[in-house]
Length: 255
Image (cartoon, rainbow, N blue to C red; front, side, top):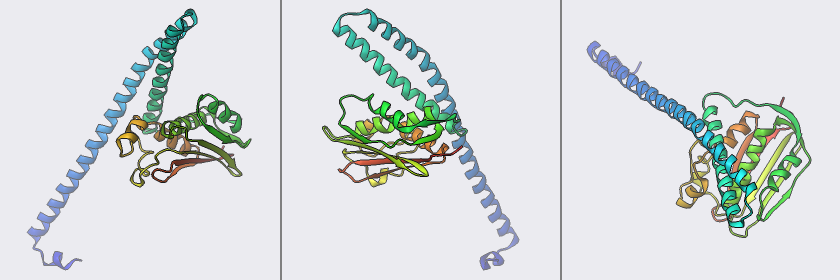
């Protein structure tokens, strides 16, 4: 026993224990309050996201219908922009829903066997006007194809947002026991202090430019949740002013 405690009177010991109990209760209550706030935030996000999805689907639907009925180039371009922007917002909302749900329970995966080269090739070729080079290995994995596509799409679009004007983006896949995907951009890079937080929910980089480009900080958090749900790992290597490389791996057979 501590000598200081041995020297205390019974009254002093009782006072010490009482103070310790009060501090413990105060700490526990503060923790519970924070947890309650987080639960309320998640519920609000889920409800708002669902409310936003219905009108957005209507906007997309009507914009696409009007696109097929117009022959005016300027009108078509405006409608196409409405449709494209609405689809982008809808995708962000879906990411937000997925990440919010993952705070409660693990993501549900529907696993099938598919060829990663075919999936990645189709996603890459959906981005036009981008200096993107790739080397894709024909690896079959047993995974959730829809979730896999979300990870690839988010990482590719993220690299495009950060890439320097006219710079090259490189994608490579390889693997034996694990499937590995790497994407490298030639952008401004990431501060060392930001590398630990960019995969966190609603986290953003420190600089104003980084914050603008990262948006609401959901995409990378979702990537992390999906990769880890598959038993994999995601990471980033970056040198300031010399670009970034995002890399993830998942077991090829993880039934």
